[in-house]
Image (cartoon, rainbow, N blue to C red):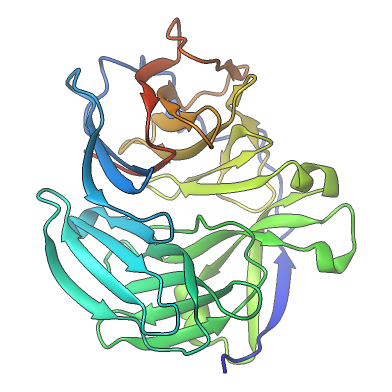
Length: 325
């Protein structure tokens, strides 16, 4: 049986920023962008070379019930496969060849039936998984070196997308509806790795963005953190938002329009953002936009007319995993 954790949620009341970070600037996205996008969707992991006109290429299988994560510093793609009553298997593939170089079993828990999300620290040493058994999905963090469980508990994470900051804070969307406070119905929270190590029966969570019931019910998730750890991005109501990674900072809306924008990642320098747009049940489009602080950019099907750059139409990807240099 996994331990029960008492959660202490901290709303850190620091002075609010007057907007997002200005570090992103307004670069001209599109042909000037370089690097390689790694994304998932439609049962596969795909790559796109931004410096060429080549389309997305499917490189590795990723079943709809698998959870995947990229570790750029180690040039790795990790894929966790559902256990369904047996040990969950994690495959490690080379991010260039996509050949499997390592395979290991997650510490076995007979109550685990499915893995919903996976996130790995920048050095590749700690893995966080959102696991599902007989009850709500819960968080488990494992030390990859010796496959020991660092933490198990917290069944309030509401979205499959989790991420680690460069300073090893785990970031996620957090359901607070049990508090029955319509002014604080959900949040984006973070927990440092060392706090997870020392959690015991109580885990303190720092809140970086807090949402009313109406805002939360519109849908919040898809968290991402800039490579330097200074900015936080998420999807709310089908639009992209960015803010300083500081409690109480004011979020800025990046996109607007009739289609869903999500699955976003920052460029290596944080100046641009790549995301999938469209109906998540069908083929999507891939856009790159500047990490701006102007009016939200209007995004609609097939457009490529200004600050938005359409990198792929009718693609099979719905979530960016990484933007590699």
